Length: 256
Ligand code: CA
Image (tube, rainbow, N blue to C red; front, side, top):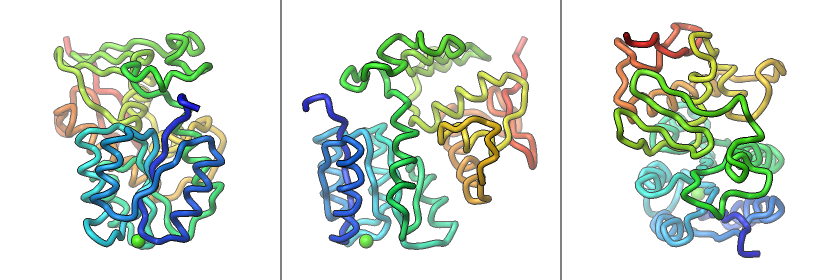
């Protein structure tokens, strides 16, 4: 099937590589694999995958560096698979551009759920192969009339075209960053808690009461930090992303 989505597994451990390959295949992806970091970067460049699972401990270059290199040219959904449980590692991983992480051993259905949630979000319309029937991008966002176009302090976001323009310049955001920014624009001056935002990224309703760990909340902080850097926003004098200490985030007031 030519319109199947492409998955890439970057993993040097044979058993884990085959397990993840199976999970992605069953989820409908055309799967390629790479057993080193350099090979992974090369394959990512060639195949433009939608989803990449990335082992942190690779024989040549580590997963952090692989993620940084892939982010130079790709907006793939990157899930880091890490054997290390240190929180610092996962945070560095997210800072290097990964969207999410799972600690080994992980449950295959957890990986499936994370990927399914993220794949419900279309990529940019510049990639028509991504516009699957039923996706918001395929029908111009008509399925979500409440989502649409936002304009705030020189920033324009279009949900249908997945674009963000700041002072006339188009921003290159990951899906996770786009989703967080969209959530804040939608909420206006209402505060979104970190738990709210974690649920948003997992495509759950805000009020389902599912368990959100401290690490999950910290990951939102890291993504917000990355987003702030890309937008050139200041934590002290925010144009868009205002931190509400100990709670979460909201949109900064409008400039007049
Ligand atoms: Ca490894």
